[in-house]
Image (cartoon, rainbow, N blue to C red; front, side):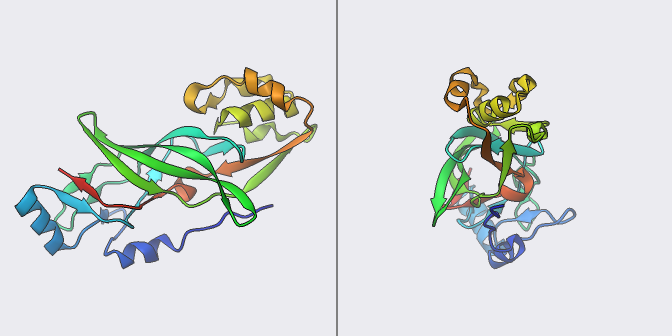
Length: 218
């Protein structure tokens, strides 16, 4: 089985940025002096590049093929605050983006690319961030009882078609398909295959968003 390339320790990365995480001490994203200056002078605050935003998703896993691109909206898993306790990004805010294929070395995988932060409907910010690269796969093989891969998962359209075709389980088509895409057109391309390798993503473990540029909140 191909193993997932992991980010450096999230704790180490967060500490390097002066950020702390905990259930009783939520994520903090700026030094007191910097936060105070931003608030007093500009009535805004900057969340610096390199900060990590923890995320969650309504499903425990997401299954896609290596080749497919799928829209995805994640949820911010906990409040992001200044050291003074001001909430910058409330828990439950949305991060809109896309899972897209990526190659690193001789391995193909997928990566979440974050494009927009929605704090509330009037408050929408363009952002530039991404997750780690996920290369962890699982093989679905005809007659091997691999239909459980799809159970309780959000599926990319190609993954749904592949699993339905290989396992013969038509109920897979009733699972959540990312983007609401139908699988009929894709299924024809995959007919005759006896096995397929799919990427299995655990959102809370794999999709934390690391910012590639600052976000300025107003």
